[in-house]
Length: 110
Length: 122
Image (cartoon, rainbow over all chains, first blue to last red; front, top):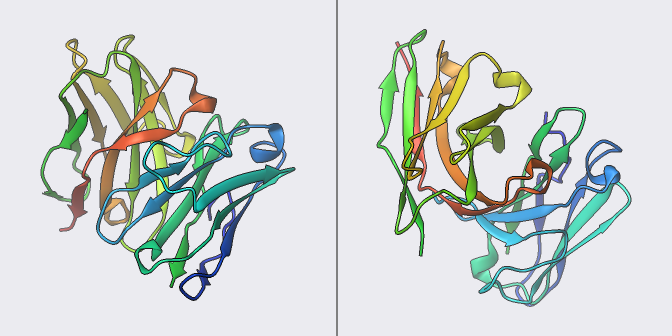
């Protein structure tokens, strides 16, 4: 059972917009700790997609955006493309565990 | 461009230990922290702990305390993760990942190793 809760799967047609939620608690996201997002393509290592709630590393398309409110965060993907089909993970820090925590992952089907 | 290159796949017996290495190619880890994250087959990501190589200070996830040891060599180019008392549930791909900065609550992982499959089987 992951500390951060994500939907197991989401889907969308090419060109559409989807959002992936990441629900936490008062000891992680709700405590103000940053949320980061990763994309994992099949049989590859995760890739940093969003850091510090809303920031995109160089090279990540602006179709990807992050937001945070209260004890939850979201990743939005606009203009869906077939290559976006992957698993997506949120990550934060939990003060009660004194450690890094991940969401359970969401499989995006395009 | 820094790359993290991990050691190869390994098969271990239950009760034994495994040690996985993570070498920085094209630079050092002297200004960074290195975390270890594992992923069981078909499962999500799980953080195990991290080390600040230049200081030699390690911090472990509560559920792995006492069973995992993370170290780094003095040249700060290679980090290691050793997991003991292996059981079948430890079968997973183990990743090392670089974090910019020493502040654990703010850590995110900008570079990842390619992953090392550890299989625990009798």
